[in-house]
Image 1: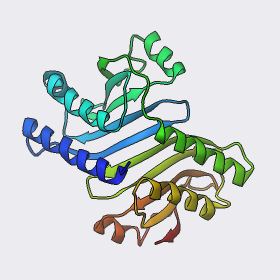
Image 2: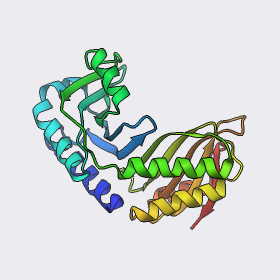
Image 3: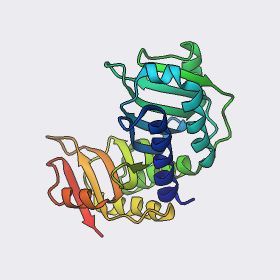
Image 4: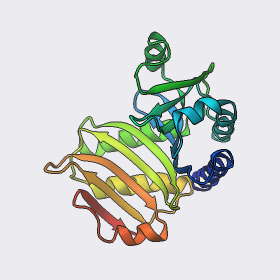
Length: 241
């Protein structure tokens, strides 16, 4: 599956449709297809300028456009929900196919385990494409083999940003910075298999420690290509391509 193309095209499509409803004040700065270490997998739309009032009034028009995108990624969600910030702005729209444990957690809380969660719709779920989940697991196995440490890969997400960047981000727990170059090469190999032509391989390090927070590969837009030439202090750049 050509994730770079699919994510970029569908991010633009969702943004265009939202602007037809609400005007140019609404945008979608990221669309991502992700897999979590627990077994959940899903799709996240990250908007700006969208309020919970907008979502409540236009739910019947917003939800179908997001579900249409999930179909293109062979995702069969069990729940569609929004994360709402303190200013009543919607920070994310999630479609999630839950693992068994999280399905019980959500059901036990009436479908709303956190106060910032606004449930849009429940579905049967199950049977989603496992490609990203399998890639997350295989990369976690590679990290453990190379480091000899039981590192936990919390999340792997394939994303497209509004600026034009596409790539893969992974969130780790229990990983030190030794051997990063070889591991980032492994992540770059995964990116190539998803038709992502990476320009930059890098990690983020928790300030004041040797602990790795994220491993990332990116196909950069022109502006970000310039920005990463002078990276933040917490960024370790493995190599440019």
